[in-house]
Image (cartoon, rainbow, N blue to C red; front, side, top):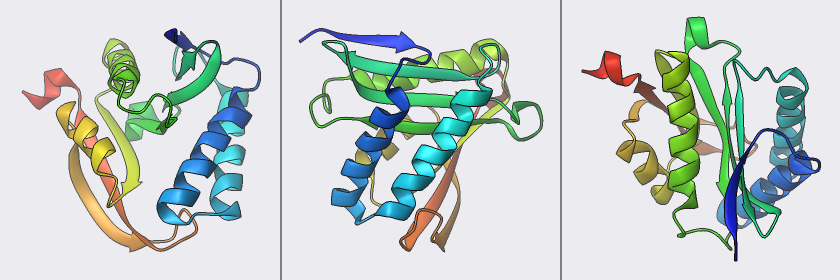
Amino acid sequence: MEISIHKGYLSGCIGRITALHADYYAQQSGFGVYFESRVARELAAFCERYEEARDGLWLALADGRVEGAIAIDGLHAPTEGAHLRWFITSDRLRGSGIGTRLLGSALAFCDERGYARTSLWTFAGLQAARHLYEKQGFRLVHEQPGRQWGNEVMEQRFERLAPRLAE
């Protein structure tokens, strides 16, 4: 199996990233149509307003098929920090190290752009992802019960300061 990382949009990636999220989180957390439609809607809007100098999208390809993704939404980076979104790998690639490579690409992009802070929303119980985030300098800064993905979970916000600010 040939695994590579592609930077930027590829035809069909919105649907494939949405499907990866819908399948994984339906099994993992019982998320349904609300979650899937939100991922599709927000990812499509991101891709439509994508600016190469500000935003980033990386796709993990296995034999040419999208099997993972991560995005950096830089729309509000100057005031609120960059937003890490849609980080996922398929079961086929989970444990292969591709998640670490995707996250590294996204954070290098943030550092190159001089983004002072990068944040993400997730929820309690996703230990493998949390481990990757913390290994890259993210820290839990807020936790609250919520329903932003359709089902009630313990929502968590993680932030990472740019290396020059974290010292």
